[in-house]
Image 1 (cartoon, rainbow, N blue to C red):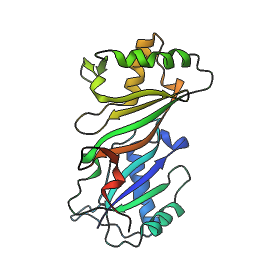
Image 2: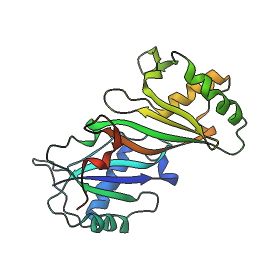
Image 3: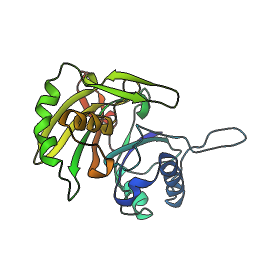
Image 4: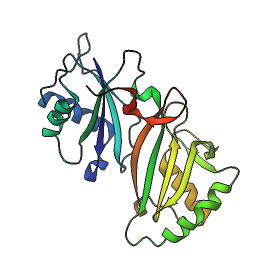
Length: 230
């Protein structure tokens, strides 16, 4: 039986990497006494896979992983069992049963939305908030994307589905996944350049609200909508 599990990553846990998150849930599933499925062979491991891992330093209320399980009870029971052995900064909020033909969470991810808040004492806030409209009015938004081996210019505007100001914060909906993956810090770097201010990751707090997939009508829906509660 294949389940999709939604969880949050908050507080100081934003500073742990993806591999640590994987190990955390492997141990948590064992501590909760949940009958997870294991791979066959000489080195069996839990059959779980994660969707669109967060960058270091980013918090989220919309993280997901899929897992195969030998036995299940109910969504509510399994949520409670996992949260009973978890820390407050990493809580499970939803578990759904996936149909047999469901794609894995990483392959179906299409978008994520984020809210960017300004840390106390940031004197760039007004400039950046006022720059959003002109920033999005540009026909192209070119950044210099650096890799270990090279650097190249890239137009990131096609990956920005929405960018707007809400209650003194910046909200963005970005393309995510295997087709095109745009990270919010790259958008903030480009916005800072456009506004004529210096970019620093420590001036802002980035929080992912939700991770989305396309439904049968091509509309964005949260990943848990692929399954049903049980």
